[in-house]
Length: 192
Image 1 (cartoon, rainbow, N blue to C red):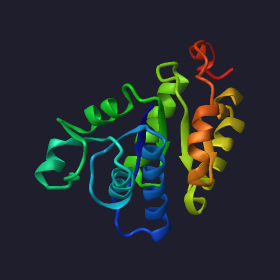
Image 2 (cartoon, rainbow, N blue to C red; image 1 turned 45 degrees about the vertical axis):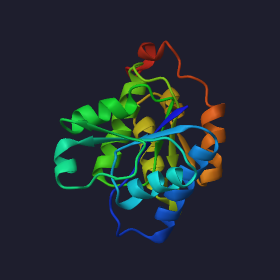
Image 3 (cartoon, rainbow, N blue to C red; image 1 turned 90 degrees about the horizontal axis):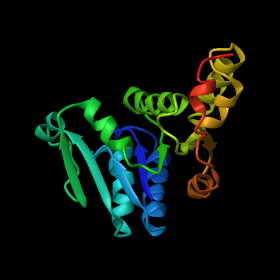
Image 4 (tube, rainbow, N blue to C red; image 1 turned 120 degrees about the vertical axis):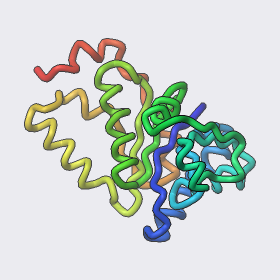
């Protein structure tokens, strides 16, 4: 599988976040999958790439040119693809991916995650989306999304668009167990 991982670039976060990202990269590579991510060398982005590379995994980075000019790119990747802007990066990350895994992160990670969720709701993206809930990071978001559904901004079916897992060991089994999103997703994209 080609697994798209959204991750933060901050190196200032708690060590548990880095350890979890590194372990995820190791698990992806050990299971024979390719990692595609934002191409950075710092923070959780660097940790997930380093984890996969430590197990001789294929790691594909998608990096905007301005970030390469700032030398933010990871130097040891299997492949580093330079793109013009953030919009093209998001498109290339998601295109051809067999699943999305969102590690904890800031506004960039959340923007990528919400775009994937939106495309899934609209019947454009059909694959699993998994949120890795390291240090209970995504629990408030889970509660918020439940409120969004309760307030009828989304349908109850939309709660199945993502899975929340607490441990790296759960990520790949959940991806394998998650069925492809329904082809009739557009029939219930609008709130009823």
